[in-house]
Length: 178
Image (cartoon, rainbow, N blue to C red; front, side):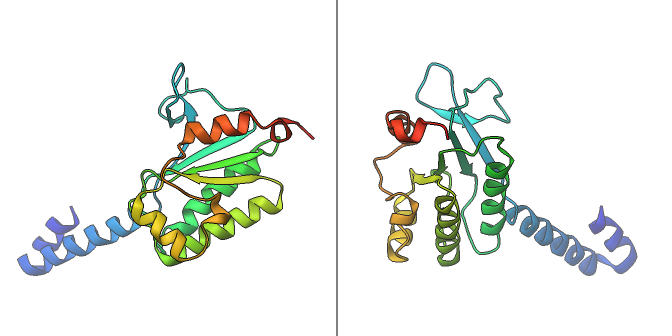
């Protein structure tokens, strides 16, 4: 609509430029606030998906599981971390485990690696175990190169969300309530 009005009011070239600039601004706005899915277990399976889209997914008592649905870069990582921390703070009983599923993140930049480590430190200081799972190879490499791998629960290519949840459920000291 803005492009049409730009063409009618300022000519063809300026109208197209206005449309292109507005499109770029909208693209950056969308990329800076990616969806952070809160996951639940698909009933009867070891798979997890977005509870917002599938409210019948099972919650895991004492655990919160998240999946950012975008690459993590300097201009969106604060939104991702704040979304997770906001949900953790909103819980009536603090969770014992927070799992970050990185399977949908094709890349993580330097600042994002350190922001995730900072979030992990904040959660760990509150007695909450933090574990990042299912990172792609480029993401694993970045986290290792930045020295934050251990803060994120020792990322590797073998641990899935289901493995992290099962390990949590088998650890009696994590399941005990205060």
